[in-house]
Image 1 (cartoon, rainbow, N blue to C red):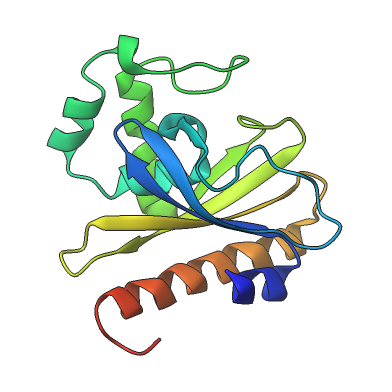
Image 2: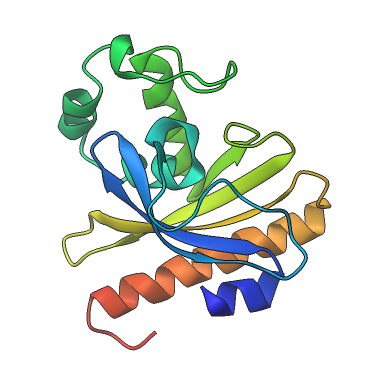
Length: 165
């Protein structure tokens, strides 16, 4: 995360899936950047966060069905978040296609996050690495953040597999 913050000058965090929530394990703040509601030990609904969507996108369909058997299992926050399991599944298809999960204002108005899962030796999501930044960030800077998050997740995946990153 230190490397990610250094490369982007944006806040970074690592989270794991805990049931239907994400649990933030590590937070690294960039100097002068907005304060975040996430911190070590904070839990948020997985469907509202980039980290959660990145982790959920790597799970088998059966596990998504077990976690979200009906719309009653979904959380809405200020009009954000999927309203049906079908909508959640469509969101996860987009994450798989894009290779990155995105969140815009679902957790904190005015802030965006991008996240990518790091996988274990079985190819299952072990943790998600994310960066959170002001929505006013220009497209070129945002592309740099996306690449840096993907690279950080790839490095962690390699380390989890026992390879040098």
